[in-house]
Image (tube, rainbow, N blue to C red):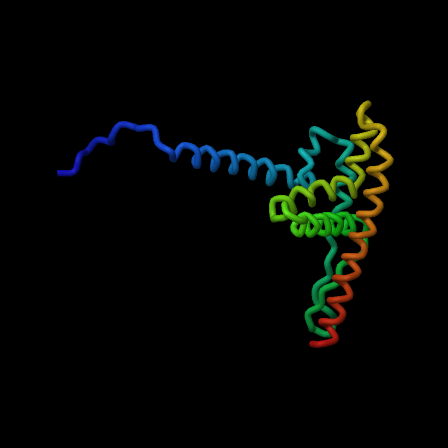
Length: 166
């Protein structure tokens, strides 16, 4: 016969993976919950000054041409350049020597986006111990914006070449 009662709970090595799964689920819900107010920004209610910055990061992509052929063109706006800077930073983290990988790419992307949109320089200038690094953050942000604009131009160039082939 099959027993109708559950066996007593015994400590096992399965506790660590379930705790990790719970932490991962909590982290994902925090990231996805804050996505409505900006790219991993922590929410507009906590930082109302960041609302204009995150709202400027709308992606504008034109799909489809008037002739009916598919076409991919990305508008070259500041918000798209900031996202392009995050993509470039992700690729640098992905290919970083010895430590490179997906996780490091994600970390680089978040840091690159934060620097490119000026949030890092703003936060450093508000902090007494970080004021000396605010100018450097602005310079790095300008460099990342240029890299993001170059990435947008590369995507648009590839889109034009694909249009010519089809």
